Length: 151
Image (cartoon, rainbow, N blue to C red; front, side, top):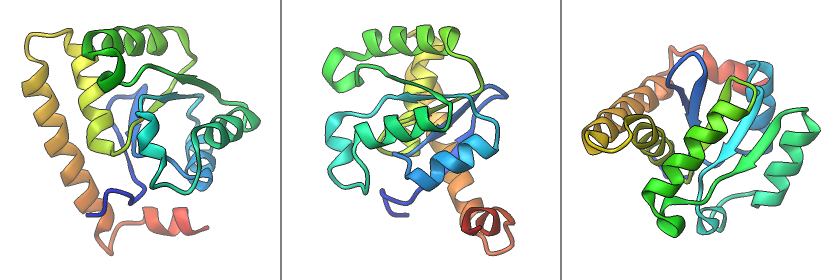
């Protein structure tokens, strides 16, 4: 599946993970009652996407969603990124969508933050597998979500 294919996965009742969203994705998140967007993507993630970070932030705020960028793990270090994510999830109104360059990277960031540290790699791998299975399901022609996205 393409790294630029837009998709998201609901991880818990309060958190979903996504690849870098489009403006249409933000409208879908709002329609699904997500209240906040957390950007965990590195600045380089936006070079291959339709919208830049500021356009996504402005669109989220225009839709009355809270927006917060955390330091990408590759720039600030994993533990700092994990701490920033935990603090953001606690401080922002939920439910929240965390995005990174791919849904798998967002899931790994969330898993690492929630694990604290010791089993982070095992949990990250499990969520990467879950995200891949979810993406395969979403690509299935019998799935009703593409009709919702197309509208």
